[in-house]
Length: 63
Image (tube, rainbow, N blue to C red):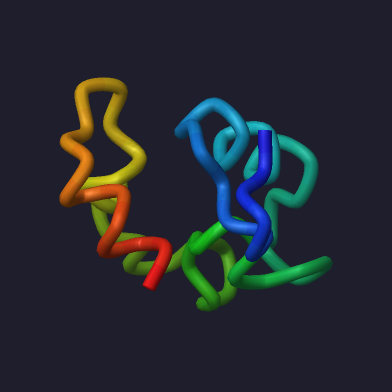
């Protein structure tokens, strides 16, 4: 699912984007993913994307 601002709620959705766009050139940065080519230097999942994310983690993404 997507939040109202377009951010991914689950890592599975971001993984889906990576599978569709191997070079990260179609829509870089979608779902708060890396904007770098070939997904370079993509950090670990943001705290709010973890399955066990706390409400504070999720609020930090929404703001």
